[in-house]
Each structure stands twice: as C-alpha cells, then as structure tokens.
Length: 348
Image 1 (tube, rainbow, N blue to C red):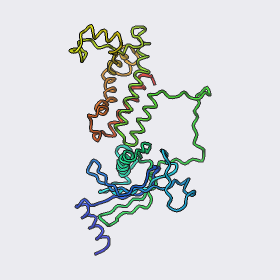
Image 2 (cartoon, rainbow, N blue to C red):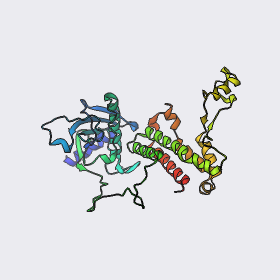
Image 3 (cartoon, rainbow, N blue to C red):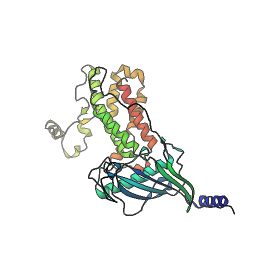
Image 4 (cartoon, rainbow, N blue to C red):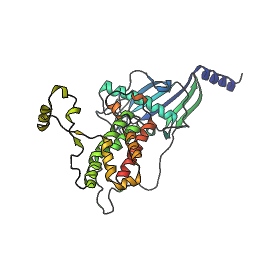
C-alpha cells in the first residue's frame, strides 16, 4: 500500500475515533515561572487540552545571562525581564485559517488556545498570589508552529504561521495629543476610562469582569453626566440630590421592629439614609425633559439600551450566575449599547 493511502486511512480512523489533535508552540510576553508538570485543561464544547509552559529571559535581557539562567522580576506585568514558551495540545482539529466567529482577526485555533492559557493563568495567579500576571488575547500569538496529527501521525506540519495584522510604513507612526488650539487634550472622564478597561477585559475573554466594569462605567456616566443634565433641563424643578429618595415608612424592610416616629427620628439623625433612584427612573426623567433626545430615539428603545447594558450585572455581582454561560458576542452587544447611549446623550 502507498504512503498516501496509509496516511489517509490513519486520518479517517482518527476522525472516527475522535483522535485528531492540534498542537501549537509559541512564545508570548507573559512573565510566569515554569510549570513543573503538564497541565490538563477542560473547556466548554467538550474540548480537552494539555499544556506545558517554560519561562525564558526576554530578548532584551537574554545577553546579560549565561546558560539557562532563570530571570524573574517581581510584578513584571509587561514581561520586561522574562517571557513564557507554551505548547498546547488540543484533542481535535482546530483550523488556523478559518476566522473566529467572535474575532475575525483571529483564527478558531487561536481563540481556543487563548481560552486554555487564560484558564492556566487564572489558576497560576491564585496559587502564587502573582495578581499582576495578565491574560492573553489572539494578537499576542505571533509566529507559532502548528502540527496536526492523527494519533501519532503528523499529517500537516506548519513550521511558522502568523495571521498578520502588522502595518509597516516608511514614516514614523505618530499621534498628536494636542487639540486645535495647541493645548494638551483633557484627561478622559472616569466613565470613559472604565469603559476602555471593560473593553480590555472583553479582549482577553474575561467576560464577567467586562460586564461589571461596563456597568460601573454606565452608573458613573449616569451620575456624572445625566443627572446634571436633568437638573439643568428641568430649570429648577430638580436639585442636586433629586435622585436620592427616602423610602416611605410602609416600604421600609424593618418597619415591624420600629415605630413610624422612631423611623423618622432615625432619618433626621441620618442613621437611615436616602437611597438612589433606579437607573431606569433617572433616564425616564431625562427623556421627559430633553426634547432633543426624544427626536433621536423612542422611550422603549432607550429602555432597551439600558436593559442591554445591565444584562447579567446583578446576577454576576451577587454570585448568582454561572459565568461560563456568558458569550463574547452578547457582551460585545452590551458594549455597543453603552457606546450608543453615550452618543445619544452627549449629541455626538
């Protein structure tokens, strides 16, 4: 029998037996200690992976040390002193050409490899207390080798693979941080910085943190931007603390343990404090007082944007949600809803 026939039969049998494997090797700028043993990781979709990791000196410090010296610097968040070499073996064929449905710049293989490594990093951070170690995302995987095999038969061997995304120009890449008047641009408000942090967590597939940071950004935007707008638009109807309300005695959850007089006395002494209005109620007031906003979006669609932003927020914050149920595309839509809301409110 010919070599090609034997190979094809081996691949066919491996497909039937679910014994196809994707193995990739690469270096990423993540500073962690070498793992003593091979780690087994299980993902959703019944994907299983084996992982090895070896710490290496970073290129810029390699010449300073001889042999196999271990170079680790405390809190090396940006891997300035050491990087890590990873080998990932996954129990199925994952295409390195087919784009990921959640990130067209990455391959399906890169998407799953990042999920595997980030699970290892999460375990590593807890075990070592090295909280500064960052998660990875597909663009960090550059110039990797890939071997596809049926059991022990390598039927496709790619020594170097890179999806690109690199821009090369004869001109220096520059950006100006001044405005049209020559002044340095203003510091961004807190809600924008929080929103960018949420996007960073989305990039690294840390979806729960992404949702929580997005909602902190949303709430900060509400109180820092929307509430002052309502005060201005209402022309004196609402004051600076309009969104803080004292619950009526009949709605207080401890009303069976104190009289109405005791309740009012506790309020006067600020033992019982006012609570904030719901986000929905605040945006209802904005809509009612802002004719320009009414021209751009209906009240129901505005409410829909708020619901989209807040999706799963309470469940995650209160520990009542299985975060493996979060989907990248869903969180992306939440980000888009916030971006649209800000644009509508700020007339961008």
